[in-house]
Amino acid sequence: MKKTNYMMTAQDVMEELGVSRAKAYGIVREMNAELCSQGYTVIAGKVPRPFWEKKFFGFSSEKEYA
Image (cartoon, rainbow, N blue to C red; front, side):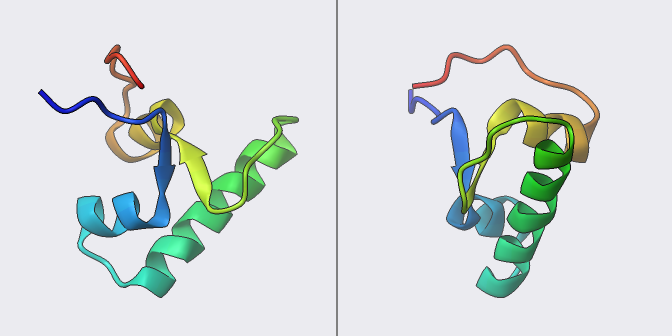
C-alpha cells in the first residue's frame, strides 16, 4: 500500500484532474492564495491534501499521510 504525502504538488494535481502542467500550477496558486488570505503559511507549488480534498470533493479524508 502506497503512503500518500500530506502535501500535493502540481504533478499530483495533473494526475488527479488530467490537466496540463500550467493549469495544475494555476490551481495550486489559487488555492495557496486562498489559504494565505485565511492567515495560513503556504509553500509555493504545494497545497495540503486535506484542503485539496475539501475544495474538490467536499470532504477531508482521515488517511495517514507520510
